[in-house]
Amino acid sequence: MHADLALDVAGGLYCGLFVVTALSAWIDIRTWTPGEEHRLRFLQGRLESEISVTPMTDGRDPRHNHGTEFRFLPSRRFLSSTAFDFGKLAGRLRELGAMNGHLDIQIEDLR
Image (cartoon, rainbow, N blue to C red; front, side, top):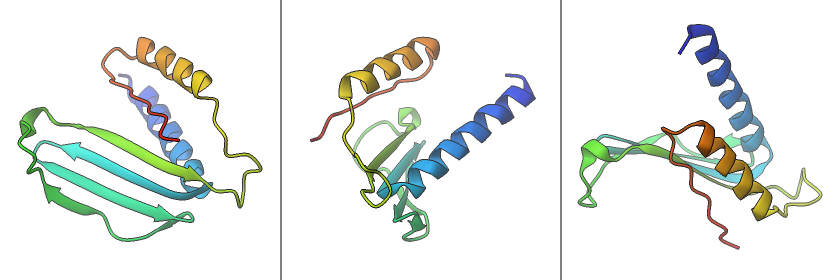
């Protein structure tokens, strides 16, 4: 990837995450690297605690366990509607998955 494009992508992801964090009642972020799980939690846009790092102990091969998970609750304080159109979100994520074959994108409706 060209360095300028990588910077643009990273900057866009950072800005998007910043906005989601600011507009959420809470957001939990989990990232897996070989052998470790990293966790962050924000409440009302503020970091609740420092990042925690724990070893993987669930029996999965740590060399192949990697990825990032974001869970959040939109804040009614800033948004008049916190309802999502699951069909639209799933369709958009399918498009992103098709354009980025190296990514595994999953979405769950936990309502």
